[in-house]
Image 1 (cartoon, rainbow, N blue to C red):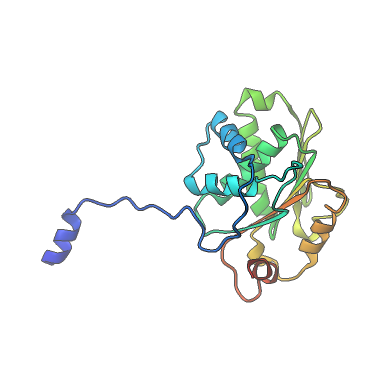
Image 2: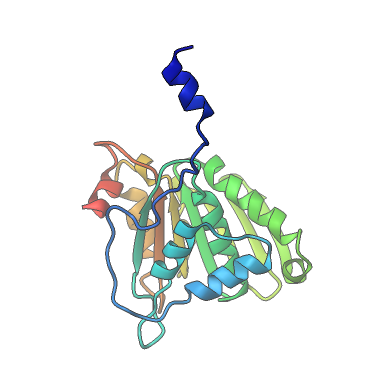
Length: 221
């Protein structure tokens, strides 16, 4: 081993920290945000959000004077293994339990991707008595999964080829792994289902795409 390599090994290891603020993002006005409510909800069920997750929550949960979301569409591009799926899982739970949204729809290019979050949500609900008390039923069929609370709130997972079939007025739509969406079919069909919603929001999550990622590239531009 060279003297230089030995010296490097003997030096104390530095703590590596990510950057909270995105390199490219749409800056918003100074508005009130429900992000703090989301952060407190996460803390109450044992999840302490990472700094970038807190930043994102504050931004996407900003509301106008009439209480509606400032951002109707939000696109988040982040590399793997940074907590994207956990953030989505907690956001779905918060909107079910705290905001009491009647319908949330989640889709990805593969059903297995959405299903992983579905099972994590189901596991979290049954791990906390205050969440399990409101749990109603869980449904599973080919290409679809659903959790319904006793108070009527629903979280629905759909395969992307049938994502909008039979769905009316979802409050929040989640599109995961959007880099794999190579045409407008799923995007257009799900966005149209929100036309009758008074306060809709669409949340798009992905890591970096390529020249075929038509939806992701359009939103980024």
